[in-house]
View 1 (cartoon, helix red, strand yellow):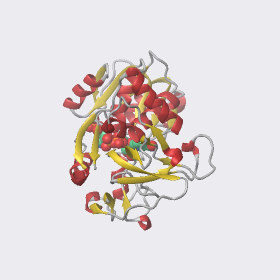
View 2: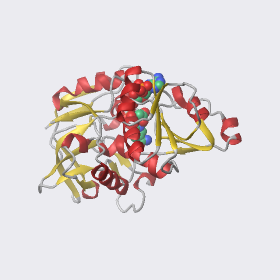
View 3: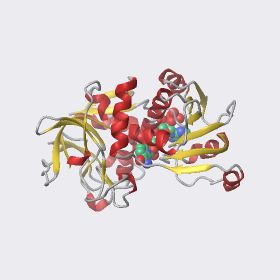
Length: 321
Ligand SMILES: NC(=O)c1ccc[n+]([C@@H]2O[C@H](COP(=O)([O-])OP(=O)(O)OC[C@H]3O[C@@H](n4cnc5c(N)ncnc54)[C@H](OP(=O)(O)O)[C@@H]3O)[C@@H](O)[C@H]2O)c1
């Protein structure tokens, strides 16, 4: 089958380890199912794997990709949940200390077919296109959990989304608007600020800009470059929910501000199967749809990775076999 794989890793030049070519067809273990991929989406996670973060070198070559929608051997149209928990684990899959994401231990979704446990399959709503459905399991699920499970926000509350152009950030803007929050966003780029407002943000600001008022919660995936601003943006007792650190994971913690203003710092990772089911229903019920920046053939995956690495994306890049 055709697949997009990580064959070597480099922190400085991650795309040197990207290979697009033939890969052995996967076996299907007992209790697992083969999905013929109709669409798969890129995530920053795929770049981290090429940089040597989260993917052990002794697992190479590894097919990349966490997001997919497709058709099973028995003809079911499905969305794939990317969090694989240990057999017998019950409850919140993201709290399983031995959980793994597709493309970390098991081959990922950027291929003609992907093999996953039966329990990782959810029915694809007919109202969503293949490309839209493929965007949901990672960035959109992460944004859903950050907003609706971890932030403590209620309709009418004010939320700031940092780094408006990112996959998680665009999802957070669209979902927060649909949920009735007051949505503010930041971006370094004027064009992205305009597009953030078109997507649903009530106002968009330059990265680091002084805001007219403090916010109840911040959705933080950028990391070191925006962390200080995120803490300063919060009202006393507010919450910063963090699920990523693209620009570095070692900012000044600003502990004085955290304890004096009683701020909450809440980590968040991916989401559960139940949360993915909730996200699918939310998209159906509200008409909210993932923002697809570009659809490329799987064979052109390198171009998508180049755009992701350059930060030249607004929304999601989708690959179709
Ligand atoms: N924990 C989890 O489960 C989980 C799940 C999904 C993602 N993540 C992590 O979350 C992060 C974002 O993921 P993603 O897929 O949304 O990535 P992405 O699409 O590559 O997001 C990149 C965005 O980050 C912002 N950014 C980059 N460098 C910046 C800088 N120097 N200063 C300010 N902003 C900067 C940019 O916003 P502007 O250009 O608009 O300023 C850019 O659009 C990644 O680190 C990823 O690994 C974690």
